[in-house]
Image (tube, rainbow, N blue to C red; front, side):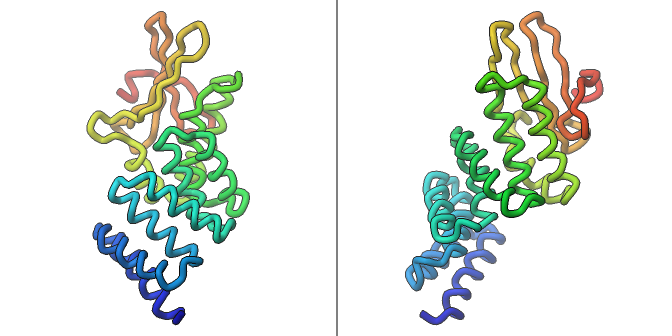
Length: 220
């Protein structure tokens, strides 16, 4: 197989997907895979293009193929963190994000999606809600420090822009604690509203170095 032909198809798939031409990108990546099924980048770019068409299960399969070929493929692990989390498989999402960060601790996408997945997992296994918030906030904040613009792009992927809410709600313990996310109207930060059954709502700023309760009027 001519490596230049293979790289041309992969590069073209990447460029087409960046332009929003996902169908053409998928065709180009499939041509690359036909030349060499063992090319991790071809499977990774195909996963991105499939994700752009909301073919999430197929995207996950492509990303998994990429990391099977190259276990050190950081972007594929990070995108599995997003795609698996979107499907509700937060345990596997967390696992792949941690694998990415073990290889590249400052990877923006892996830090961001790990933070989101940790929040989706919530207080399983008896973890304290403040501990969850601190760990998740640390990773989300680091992503913002490393590249604010890229983190804003990831934020838009994780937020349902129609109603400006993130699909994360947890019922925690007998007190009926709810953790729900919203997009801050003033900044691109994520804030989490913690509501008790008594009716009082607290707001936790997820972006600050030390997540803390805020005056609800300051963000809604």
